[in-house]
Every structure is written in structure tokens, then in C-alpha cells.
Image (cartoon, rainbow, N blue to C red; front, top):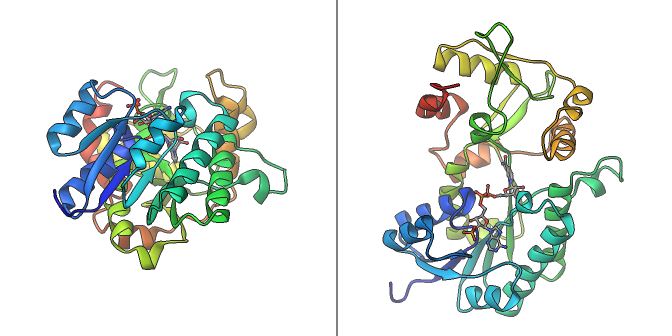
Length: 299
Ligand code: NAP
């Protein structure tokens, strides 16, 4: 480990940070400092067994954040809006990390950002978990944090969980209930983020100062459904739900999700070619489905 530069990875026990830790450890150029609020949890123990230094820090506790960043060459930063669904809290957490990265002189920060939709649309549309990250991106640029922002597309994994196909009344057919109409929606497996972040950290001159929209595939919901049907052998179709009808569904965060899909209607910049350059093994949706078809056994 001696002599290696350290990368502090926030959200290390989660989907994004977990993928980043895994890729960095495999690559072996940097040493990894993995951040969690609970170093005793099984995911944290596994990170330690895999070779990461695991440290305790809470994004709401400034001293612990500073401690987690001290001495690091770089960082991967993700904040989790969905844990609290509070835009201001996500902004506060993000700005505070940016301040410490700047003060401690980190040389390269990869931030999991998104667009400030409110600003982009002149106030026409508000997507709280995008806007907060966009505000943090802007702030980090203002205070001159050497940062690359990676803006992830919709995780393919969402199609196995929150947005999994719903059984129709006939008991046989399934529907994807996603209000995109015929507009293609970018997607990516979050497990493919790690090698992307690793490539970015290894090429700071090329990527510092850039906002990179990540996507592995641009498909209509009909195409997602067709691939799912082909791989699982089940009949899965696009429900063709409208945004208006979607907004009336009953689950926590439905307004936020509706606003996000409305922003996706505007086809935000997600660059499949650059994503493939950064991770040549990035999975297409078909590959992802083939690797995960077990998850559909008990639909
Ligand atoms: P995740 O799998 O739920 O993991 C959340 C991570 O955040 C955990 O490692 C957790 O660590 C850490 N964390 C949460 N609050 C913390 C705090 N106060 N202090 C320290 N660590 C904290 O989440 P994820 O999917 O990796 O990332 C979520 C973010 O991705 C969201 O903000 C979302 O907007 C963004 N995003 C999602 C999608 C999508 O399609 N789902 C697409 C683009 C962007 P411990 O619990 O171990 O402390």
C-alpha cells in the first residue's frame, strides 16, 4: 500500500460507491478509503476484507467528513437524496464536501452529479434530486474544486426493483409502467460505474473540469420491454402510461419521479460513446438482462 495515492470513496457501502471501491481495488493503482456511517455492518466488513481502509464518517458531521478526506489525493463523492428526500440537505452535504476537498487540496474529485433542471428550464420544471446536485456542481466549479461530474442515466437495476414489470389483470402479461411515450430513455448498470470512475481518475488532464453524461443504451420503453420479454420468455409490454396518469399513482416520491421522467423527455446529454471509451465492458441492456434474468423468475 505504501506510496499509493489514496482515493476517499463516499457511499462505499452503496450501489455507486460500492462499484467504485471494487474497480479501484481491482485496478490497484490507488489505495482506497471507504466511507460508511457504520464500520461494523457486513458490507463495510467485506470492503475491509477486500483491501480497503474503512472509515466512519457521516455527511451530517463536518468533522468526520474532513477526517475522511484528510491526506487523500482524490475522492469519489455521492450523496443519497432518497434517504431523506430533502433538496436543501443534499445541497448542504455536497457543498460541505466540496469545501473540504478544496481546503485540503484534493487533486481530483469525481462527483456523482446531475443537471440543475430548474435553472436549465427557466423554472418550468423542478426535479429536486437533480437540482440539488446541479447546484453542488456549480458551487464546486465556483470554488475551483478540480472536479469531474459524472451524471448517471437511469439505473437498469431500477427495472428489477422500483420500476419492475407489473402483472396485468390477465395474470400472464406484464407491463413496464414508465411514462416515456416513444422517447428513448438512457440507461446504465450502476455496477459499471466503477471502471468509469477509475478511468477518469487515471486521466485527470483529460477529464477534470468536465461534466460527463453516462449511458450504456438509449431505448424506448417498448424496446426495454421487448428485450426483457426475449430474455425472460415472459410477455412484457409498455403500459404507455402518460405522465399525468403516472403522477396520480400512489407511492412515496411519485411527484419527484414524474418530474424526472418529464426531464428525460427533454433528452439530457448522455454520451454512450464516451461511456464505452471509459468502460469498454459496459453492459448493454440485453447483456444486463442476460446476467440478471434470475431476478425475474418470481415476478
Ligand atoms: P445507495 O445504494 O442507497 O447507497 C447510499 C450510500 O450513501 C450508502 O453507502 C450510505 O452509507 C451512504 N450515505 C447515505 N447517507 C449518508 C450520510 N449521511 N453520511 C455518510 N454516508 C451516507 O445509493 P446509490 O444508488 O449508490 O446513490 C444514490 C444516489 O444516486 C441518489 O442521490 C440518486 O439521486 C442518484 N442517482 C440514482 C439513479 C438511479 O437510477 N437510481 C440515477 C442517477 C443518480 P452508509 O449507510 O453505509 O453510511
